[in-house]
Length: 296
Image (tube, rainbow, N blue to C red; front, side):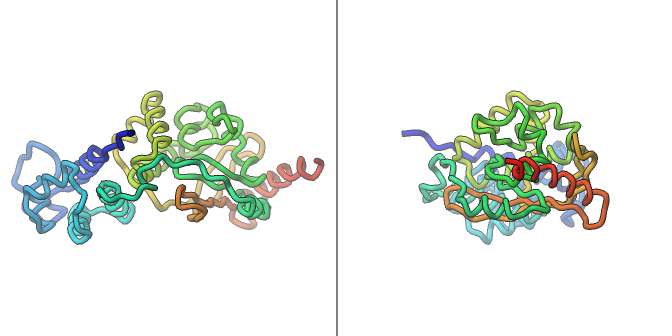
């Protein structure tokens, strides 16, 4: 029987780092002068959260299974966790439960994309749209998305099925630095998204293999992974340097796309502000993308 992974190290690292980021002044405590370590002490967090120091010490060591939601809420408030970080903490606690569901523990299998999803994507002709799984593989895309992210689809980092992966592209293909204007921001968000996914599904072997690969090969990823930043909700503006269409400033928005209890998916749409030069360039790219299909 395969031994299921233990997420206590992730719990310990996450809570310790968040505690180290807070000062006594930030939480209304008097400063006691010089400290041996940065941030709050464990006993200070315990007092503010309304639990004993011994109990919080045990929690910070990773023994989070069976902890009540009220206590987790108190710890989240004390550590000033944002919404995504709070969700991550609760996900870690849920995954640590002895009664965690079999679906959470087993290796998740890839889910076939229903034809209706591809039909939906293909119907979106004026925006680039694609579907990703929790590991950030692009598992389905419309013609404009394939044209817009052509450097990713033609990268040496695609898998054996020709599917791009955002993390592999950013950290294993140097050309990504030229394609994405804010590479640092994109790399930070990508790592934080994978961190959140690891909190939800710590027993996903494919995800752990991806993180292991990136940690081994890429110092940039390894440094970001160690920072333990978490991101669940994201969206905004991305600037790209397309090899054919030129510079593009696009708005993007991911949305949950429920398709299976075995795998989480997200639908992401990229669009330009109407009436702008970016809108014109995106429409030109869309016409180029539609040409092969029309001629075929």
